[in-house]
Image 1 (cartoon, rainbow, N blue to C red):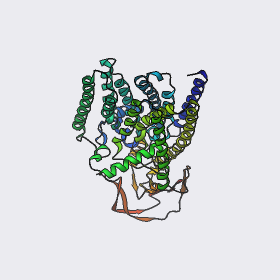
Image 2 (cartoon, rainbow, N blue to C red; image 1 turned 30 degrees about the vertical axis):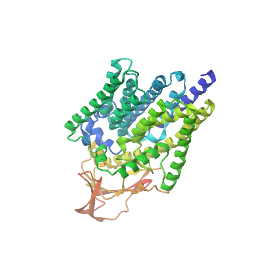
Image 3 (cartoon, rainbow, N blue to C red; image 1 turned 135 degrees about the horizontal axis):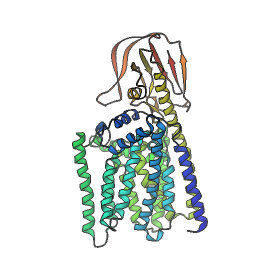
Image 4 (cartoon, one colour; image 1 turned 180 degrees about the horizontal axis):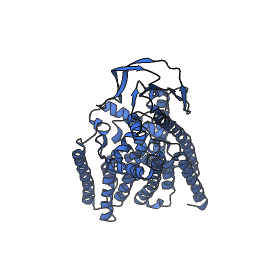
Length: 501
């Protein structure tokens, strides 16, 4: 690599890092939704939350609490640090793959550009901007070393043992790591070590043994092999539903959220045609196939844990499911471009990728900043009304363009952050309108006060569904009428909270 290319590459990498750190900055972000449930449970050392076994995440939240207490900034600093470490691991994985499958390309810039693309990749923002979303980055934090060490298993048995230890830590972090045994098979099938086929088969068998043993112990600890929220529903969905969810995950790996489904389909068709053109050109160049096959397999296999969940196609909800797939997508894309396009075009494409990422990542940050403002303002205003016998809430916001606000956790938020407030907060209605993006959407959010609300009867409330089939269910109640002297009323709109008191 000549000196001018190295200098240009350094400049691109620096800007990618600077842009990412600026957009991921912890300032202005807050606790959201499930944060209000899982952080207090982690503080109290509850290890099997919602039938999930993710003690690594629980420990990380407990440590954050010891360091930051109820300041959300410290938790978000941890999320950024995790993402920075994973970016470095993506770089190491790229170099390891080149050394193993393309020995003549060890001076390539491909691993560095792939790592930079991963750092600013805009469609896994939920993992960094939402505290509980860190489960995706924690799983990747141990999954990538497990993969790097497994690729070097031929050097020493200690590499393989280290791979197994990292794999187990990944399993204790997030279910995305469940695909590691499948990728191990792909690695072995792509390139058996000469004369060591039996040993390679043994390696894979041990990986599967560790995985099955983990599932058995998980079932003993949680009472269920799979939880109903994520992987468990894989057993109950039709093949059609799984296929559609897979297509949504694939589409959102390539594209931003779309308010219009037709535009999403058209854009997906264009994106797929572009990828097909890259693959055709790659094969016409008669490039070495093993690394391409391995990256393609790992990319597609990494969707499996999320097939029962799918992803939001009109907002940013569920983007944490793309964190692991984005590792292999960025490696795949940059490797293919590195092989078929000259250096100047490659560097130009990298600049365009970073610029587009900046736009969409900034958009996601605005969604999460506003969601945090809604949550923080609500909890602070509740704390100011200790003299009221009860607070009633209309249109409690569930989402802000996919950024989760109070889908769950409102009651727990008040209990955790306003422990001096002992009165009842009653939800009259919830706002689920974010399913369709508001044409007049604004990133602004303000709190207003009014005294003009008349008294009115209370006949129904939204209560938590204890069976978790939905978040809230409408229930008939016998409750005294709303009275301004005794009660307060919170009414939400897209851009404001109006408090009648």
